[in-house]
Image (cartoon, rainbow, N blue to C red; front, side):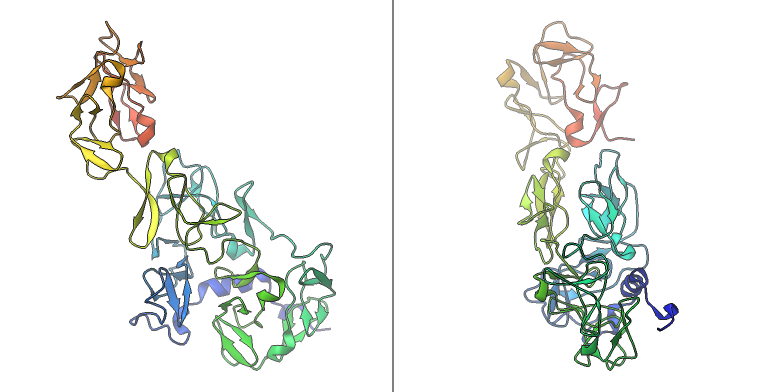
Length: 392
């Protein structure tokens, strides 16, 4: 029996995989475009295209994939810093952007900083939006490994593994299976392969479904169990959204260009409607944006900025236009607000035919104007001015 000190834990393997730069791989000269540049919306390692949304595989527009500095996430194909999100974010916060909180490398809720479950060897639980151990790939196989839906003992050189994860063929890379730890051990015949995996004596990049792995371990053939290679972990995964160019609803990959399911690169879909925004393509990625940009002096009629002085399209400050005429009111062209909806409402605002105080985030206004719902643009109502303003 070999000493357990030689065993490499899953967490250490994943940490090493994420921390080593892809620049040491053949063909990863950051000064040159990737070999798949002409057809890849994400980033390239050689001829292979990746979503480019993971900290260890970050890039956009067919550029060579790069590794973000420690602690920095990859957002829209670029490495970025950290900042806070607004409390209205129901997912997690990454570089000041509210993420869905369901991605394995961006998991969380309540506007808390996103957690990268990958570096812990875990996945993101969609029900709790927290990291948890991955599910078994085959039933009743806690001490062995899975080959398809069949549980094997996991202690042979050709089928080595445990915890109901995919079996590894150690012999393919000149390694042996430690019968106690159920991990491949030995010098191998792959030479220097710090970030990829070993297959038939050759160091592979480790992102392919048929050759998945990292940290120099033997490559796994995910296709044998009907799975795909997760580029964030370089382990076989049942995630239905791996390789998704759009966004993931949790159970399926969708195009990511609709207002209720917006996103790119296989990240969790975001509901732009709930944020009072629309889904737009910015560069190579889909993301939630204001319905019309730079419309400070007018209002948004769909995705078009208009003057905001018409009775049928009244408003300003990027807010959605109001149809005053439909409520038997008119547009005050100086304040660009609907007035005259309810009589004798001098200090508050009109909601239907009812006069409200005008200080609520959902009913804000004064001088008898129509109440505005500040929350639709994530604004708040200022009690002093009774107008919608950005949150403090």
